[in-house]
Length: 290
Image (tube, rainbow, N blue to C red):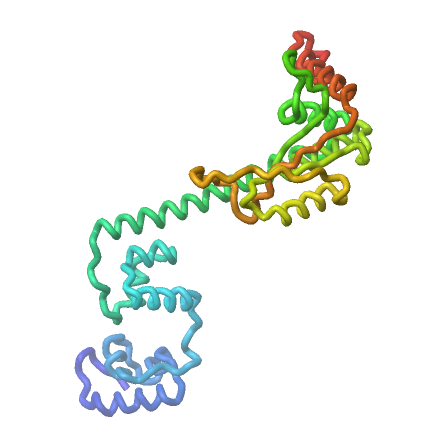
């Protein structure tokens, strides 16, 4: 059956044939070949209003995006805002939501602020990813610590955070105060290395009276693996209502003071070790740093 473009003596009869074939489950290509209709416009007119069979429908990887875009559009989102949220093109969004009502026009300033905030949130996420990767890489660079490396780290840590003797005030006692649990763990590992017995340690919590004192006492006791008998009475800091404190919340546990009993000789050795490190680090003879 041959047809010239635009001229069909019995168009309605041809349409009935096309519809019958479509309902039998034939594809557009199969109908075109069966009826010898090579013009797509004519074929579209013949099949107008007749849905394709299910087997010809291909799953679309963007179905979830389309559904989400329509949901956001119904909430009044603009194309720009949907694009930032979903990361797809505005042309795709336009096709997906063109049958939905347009949202009310917003103040351009508000739209600009929204777009800027979304871009900044994305930038923050990128920066956070970079920050974590850098920290992970740096952590892996340390590897295992030798006893000498731990010894050096502990001396420097104490000299930075521990109490120190002054000519005008003799304080030859080893007392270390810190609020960071990781710092406390490292310091305890160092004390173990240099032979300080856990039985020679006394602990004391210093914390604001407005905090959960009981929870903090339990936390530190578990961290240092010592019972209540090793702890002196907690020192409570008075809360000034005029002061805006940032060290609040469930993660605030105050500071822990660790005192080594009868430690005058140990303090003197720590001071000597520290100045030995300083002398070795500043020596002009590089072999002295090995």
